[in-house]
Image (cartoon, rainbow, N blue to C red; front, side):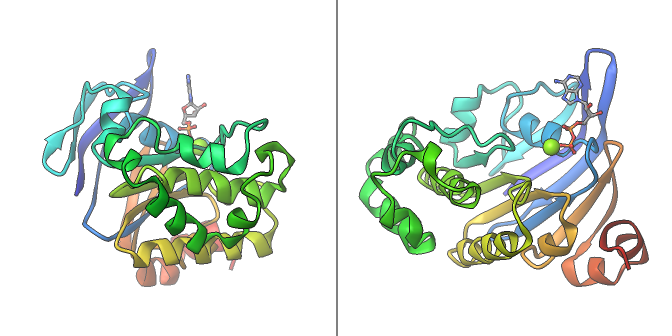
Length: 235
Ligand SMILES: Nc1ncnc2c1ncn2[C@@H]1O[C@H](COP(=O)(O)OP(=O)(O)O)[C@@H](O)[C@H]1O
Ligand SMILES: [Mg+2]
């Protein structure tokens, strides 16, 4: 469903993504693993049209995304849960969730249905609909941010380091939720430094270092890879 071919991205004169090619098939969960500064967020922001590609192609369901504005890309069925969560802290859980559907005509017609879906994945949000987002715990806010992304009714859900700053038990819980989301048939692109937990969610993953893909394999093979073990799993 998503095909990226020979992508190059620069900030000014500094190139941060080099000749990068990845693909995501329907219903597939894909990992983009790499250390801080590797280029994960830049790649995601380029897909979603927040950063301009220097060269290369990005196709979503065979249509090029290059040059499209972000809101048009989102409308095609790609939803981003950004690294900076960008919730509205003084608004309620319910208001934040509904904003996730605000700019997408198809999602606007399915608000109640999508709310039910979000609440089925994250029951805690249903208990807290009237609570102000800013008063919730870090883990709950993270779930709300993902819930908001789901309200757009996307075909592809992109998550930029959802585990960041969460205690280990919450990371495990959160990634369990991602597995539930994946079961519904949604495609997932998960950017993570937490490779150990990330590998449990994804079908296939890419390793990005210094803006280049240096490995691509199934999650089972990545778990067994010496490079992954040494550099990311600490074994
Ligand atoms: N807006 C920006 N302007 C200039 N350089 C940037 C900008 N954003 C990120 N970078 C640089 O690009 C590289 C990749 O960053 P980033 O995509 O945020 O990596 P990651 O998400 O994997 O941590 C880093 O060297 C970072 O310093
Ligand atoms: Mg990042």
